[in-house]
Each structure stands twice: as structure tokens, then as C-alpha cells.
Amino acid sequence: MHRNILVEQIRTKKSYLCVGLDTDIDKIPAHLQQQPNAIVKFNKAIIDATLPYCVSYKLNTAFYEALGSKGWDAMEETLAYIPKTHFKIADAKRADIGNTSNQYAKAFFETLDFDAITLAPYMGEDSIRPFLEYENKWAIVLALTSNKGAADFEMLGLRNGDENSHLRAEFLYERVLKKVSAWGNPNNLMFVVGATQATEFKNIREIVPDHFLLVPGVGFQGGSLQNISKNAMNSEVGLLVNVSRTIIFAGDKENFAEEAALIARQYQAEMERYI
Image 1: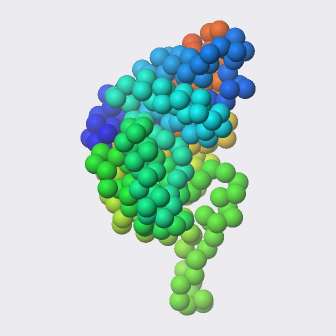
Image 2: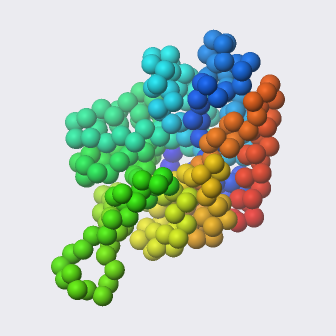
């Protein structure tokens, strides 16, 4: 999907909501669990219910891969059901040496036709480059995540040169933003920034003012949509705020899709106030 189309969808729907289809077979409503293609039926109902309120869907591939070939088939069928008007993200956190990344890119951009894939930058440019070679496809690179363990590496201070400098150390996540942003451009690169990292959003926008940010961590993880919107929105909105469990598992009875729609509509209504 071209950036202009994504921005147009956001403006038209007054929403930058991404619904995360992290479909755990053990958490879907009991009346579906024993049915054939239970995950697909659940996902289709969620998609039908939330389509008017979001601009994107993110499929966390772990929940499908855990089920073997049946799970992979369910992911493919779910992906095919999402209309082209909506931005489709593979939350797969891939990236490897160049020839392996070539195959990952082919898998998710050609065979599966996702619009974007999440990537870990640790192995450097040659591990990310193959994903940037596709027209109207996006690399979404992990920068500052919402989990507690983010402090282990992402917030490490890097010192260059004078140890006695009065300037604070550069954080590793800042180096990632600066380095990776030079490999692509705002039309093919996004960055993952966790919603719980609210104090860093203004700084992040100084480093990458024009790139889209994929922001997980709203809902169960406690991130504030208001804080994100205030501190991270740019002139084209520049945000995809992901909400997964809070929406898709809003209800556990036969009206689960209606419950999901209600929560998605609430998020969209709040987003409309900030745009």
C-alpha cells in the first residue's frame, strides 16, 4: 500500500486504529472452539465487526505458527479476507542474513501479500535491505518496545569519544532510529514504539519526524492513547495504534463480535477528537 493511500484512509475514517488479530485458540468463545476452522470463523467475525472503525489489521504470526500447518492455513485465509482498503501487517519480527531475508520477504510480500512486516534490526542493514526493495511494501523496525525487557538493551547508553562529556549518552534505540532511517525513507519504513514509552515520544519525533510509528501497548498493557496522540502525531497523523486483546476478546459469548465492534468504535471516536 502506498503511503498516500494509507494517509487517505486515516483521514477519511478519522481513525488510526490497527486491530491485532492475536487469535489464541484457548481464548476464543467456547461455542467456536470445537468447530472446524474455528480461528478463521472468529477472525472473519471480528473483521466484519471492526472494519468500519480501523485502517489496519496486524496478524501476530506466532499464534498461527503454533498450530502448525492448520494455523498457517488459517492465517492465509484470514489475510485473504481482509479487504485491500486496510493495511495488513505481519507481526513476525524476522530479519537474518541477506539470502535468508530475501526468502522471508518473498514469503510475506509475494506468497502472502502482506503490506508490511515487523523486523528486528540487530543484524544490520543487509538483514533489512531485502524488505526495502519491494515497491509499496513496508519494513516496520523495532525501535523502543513496550515490554519490561526493553530496558535490557534498547535503553542502554552508548558513549562515543570523551567519557567526560556533559552530554548524556545516546540510547541504543536512538542509534537504531538514526541508522535505520537512512536505509529507507518515510514511504517504506516504519518504527515500532511501545505505548508505555510515553516519555520518549517527543524525542523520537525529533529523530524521525516523518515516519509512521506502529504503537502497540494500548489496552491491556496500559498505554495512553491521549499521550501517544499528543506527543507522537505529525502532520499526516503518522501513527498506527494497535489494540489486540482489548478488542478481539471483549466478549466471550455468541455476541463477541458486537462487543468487539463496541470497543473498536470507542477507540475510533477518541481518535477522531485528536486528528
